[in-house]
Amino acid sequence: MDKLDTILKEIRDSRQAIENRLDMITTDMNIMKDDQAKLSDRLKQTESTDILPTHNDNENAIAKLQQQMEALQERIEDAEGRSLCNNIRIIGLPEGKEGNDPTRYIETWLQSIAKDKLLIHFVVERAHRMPSRKPIPGAPARSVIARIFNYRDVALQVARELDPIIIDYARISLYPDYTLAVQKRRASFQIIKQRLCKMEIKYALLFPANLRITHNQKTHFFDLPDLVSTWLDENLPYS
Image (cartoon, rainbow, N blue to C red; front, side):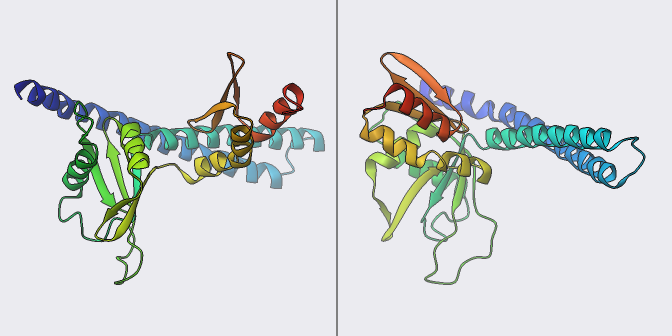
């Protein structure tokens, strides 16, 4: 028991380091968003100005600014996505079930559903309902977002193994918490994933949205579903 207490203390003591890193990510994101706003202003000025000597120069300047904005947007989305990489989204938990301490409730609940994994002890840094108006009785409950210090993938795996999970007659589901942009990119692989399943080809969708395929003891990576489709057509045309 003393050993477990020591481990838990070390985990909880390291929370501050995690919080500091999150603060740094938030600061970087704010700086990048400010840079993006400045680039946007420069782009608008360039489009409306007649100071540039030629039409071609004007077009080149606009194209360069657009490239800078796109690169900056990618950096912002990546930073936002990585700031959520330890989060899970809990769907269906009845309103108020978490009481006044949602963090402790989620931590205890996760531990209870993973009771067969004796060496696992979840540490939830924080948990909260989505910040929207409390639903009327009978309406769907708001999602709960929980940031897990450790074993996030284990929590998701346990939820899949136990599906369905029922609390007070409500079905509970756990999902990774991705930004909307990342969700859309990952969803774009859905059809090609079905094709890979039918072909019995091993694959994994990595963060943020990169598909890893293992075939004939070789590994391939793709960031667009069209590239996967082309690769399959060229290498496995009759499968």
